[in-house]
Image 1 (cartoon, rainbow, N blue to C red):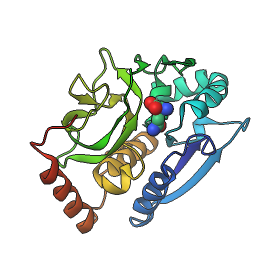
Image 2 (image 1 turned 180 degrees about the vertical axis):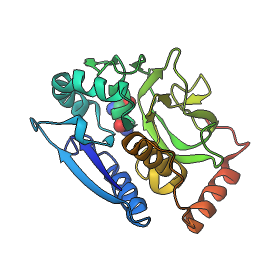
Image 3 (image 1 turned 90 degrees about the horizontal axis):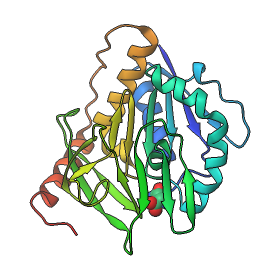
Image 4 (image 1 turned 30 degrees about the vertical axis):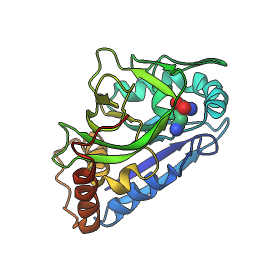
Length: 244
Ligand code: GLN
């Protein structure tokens, strides 16, 4: 079996090393004898979504998001068709915001892809920066990580990725973080999202293989000793603590 992972605009959307998430997907495939190829797309590269199995949109500063939104306009319809056809997407922070209708900043409005019906407004004053812990119906293990965003996202009628146990999440008020739409996961959890949360990486790999090969996939389990230990440590450290 083989998966092709598309990394969209890493020169613009790679804040806090989101590229590590690609390495993690690749490694977890290879450890199981699944071939994994990564294709990075820059500028005006032609993107053939029919050749992709997982798409990663990373995080970026407001400035980078403003620049990249022009590129996204050109691929919007093909990207939407991929998502509606159950294409797998993992979108982090700035990339997550860009899946929605818009991100309104004090310097202007950044148009999003409008693939998931959600809106982001820049909050007043402070950024939401802290460790974050979620409980998600999709996984038995908690999802842990770090968030750093000025935008506050309203996911409207969409399903969240998880319930915030510690941290701020989508807007610091709803008590929820991220979004799940078809085979798309959007989240504010940055940097090593997938290395820290192998359950999320395996979920994406499984969805992508099932879509491509039209059969039920049970991935060979990996030990993940350090990952599980670190996850439990973070969960226990922050559970019950009051965030901002
Ligand atoms: N620029 C966006 C914000 O501040 C996203 C930042 C990010 O990707 N960390 O909300």
